[in-house]
Each structure stands twice: as structure tokens, then as C-alpha cells.
Image 1: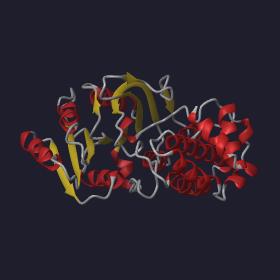
Image 2 (image 1 turned 45 degrees about the vertical axis):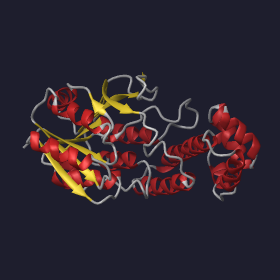
Image 3 (image 1 turned 90 degrees about the vertical axis):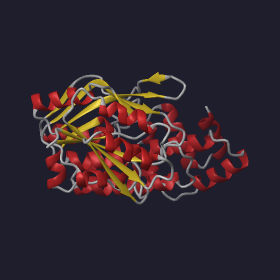
Image 4 (image 1 turned 135 degrees about the vertical axis):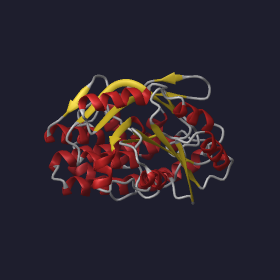
Length: 339
């Protein structure tokens, strides 16, 4: 049995894939398996996967029809044999000591999961670390502490200056494999429920009893204009609302009460603000942007949120953005989003 299974979903990234795989093959921890999941990639990725597999017996390749990122990760989980599991996106790379450090951490603490930090980079050589990263080493060992962590991963309370202080991708976590097998924890399809990482982490934490978070920056996340997060989607606000409804039901099923509602609603408001800003900053003609904004303003859920969520307690610019949205002040919303 390998110490760690590293699952890499792959689609249309032949330019970046070799550097990703090389960063895994050259890990200082050698007792790993690397599962390359070709999600029906139309480029040269399938051949690259097979070439690497022929060179190193630690590599498994799964070829499958295209179903998206979440289901590709699930296909990797199905064949993983490692004591721990983690994920890497195929246009990213990791530091060479990443898994040696993480494995030593879980061996020392016996934690079910360890979260860690990432830095962003782009093709122009720029790098930066997000403000919503882990600042200090933390440990969560009581049910209450872990439930508070779950809430914090969704969003902050209304008065907090940032929408979220903890932003954790499944690529920035090492999971003990046993709970994944025992409770059949799997990713949702991002084509149905965006934020598949958040939902996977929520499902896993429901069954965790010991959680570590360390501030080490071990993962390198490429800011890629063709990534799922960066693609301009006309239906993004509706997708956000569908996710919001799903999370509300999930929180209610697990007795998170009013605090769960407050966190989920702030998540939805923040995701909505991001979606509007992304659309307004796109290269589309202004006329088309304003037409789309009118459709968004006319969605029937803003009044209910305004009546039940204390949005005026949000930081001023966030409160104004939602107020303009709720009241239907399209031009003010447009120019505020441009700022």
C-alpha cells in the first residue's frame, strides 16, 4: 500500500501537464501512487499520460469519457490504494517536499485531515499569496470546534470584513482514506453544484474527529484564464442560487440553525457579487451587460434575503452592492461593480 494516493484530473492541459507530473515524480516522499485521470481530453494529454506511466510504475492512468472535474476525481478515488488521498489540478504543481512534510504531520498527530496553504502564480512569472489563507497552525479536536470550522469554510458572520477567512481547496488538503471508503464520500459534479471542493470538505468533516491546519505554502495554483472559475457564464447567478439552496438544506439536516443560514447567505451574496463583477469587467458590449444585469435584478429571491439577512451589517461596499441589487438600481450597481 502506498502512503499517499495523488489524484490528477486531466482535461486539455498538454502545455502544463508535464511540469505538474514532474513535480509529483520528484517528491522527496517516494512511497506514493500518482493516478492520472484522462477525462476525455481532446488534445495530446492521453498520450502524455501513457508515456509517463510507461516510465514509472507508481503511475496509474484512467481513461474515461468526459464528465467534468468532480467525476474525474471520483474515478481516481475508486482505484486509489493509498493510506491518505490528495488531489492536484493538472495545470498546477507542488513543492518537492510537500507530501513528505504532510505525511510526517499526520503520522505525528494522527489527524484525519491536514489543510495547508497555496500561492497563486501566472504565466508571466507573478506570484502572490491570498489574504484568505491560514495564518497559524490550528488543531480542531472537539465536535464543536470542527463544526465551527465547517461554518468558517462556508463564509464569515455578517460583520466580518472579509467574506471568508479560510479558503480551502481539496488540492490543499491531505485526507485519511478510510473515512472516504467507509462513508462513500465523493465529489458532486461541478456542472450541477459549483464549489465541489467546499461540498467535499463539508461531507468529509462531518465524519472527522481530528483536523490540522498548517500555514505552510506547499501548493502552486496557476491563475488560468481557461479554468472553470475564470470562464464567463451567463447562468452563474442561477448556479450560485442552486448551490445556496443545497447548502441550506445540508446545514438544516445537520442542525446548524440560524448560524448556518447566516453563513450560507453571506456565501451566496459574495458569490453573486463576484459573478456580477466578472460579467461587468468582461469584454462584452455594455448594452449586453446591462441587459444581463436587468435579468439578474429581476430574480425573485433578493427580497426574501433582504427581509431575513442583516445585509446592512456587511462592510459598507458589500452592503451597498447588495442594496443596489435588491432595490433594482441597475446603473448604480453597474458602476459600483466597475470600481
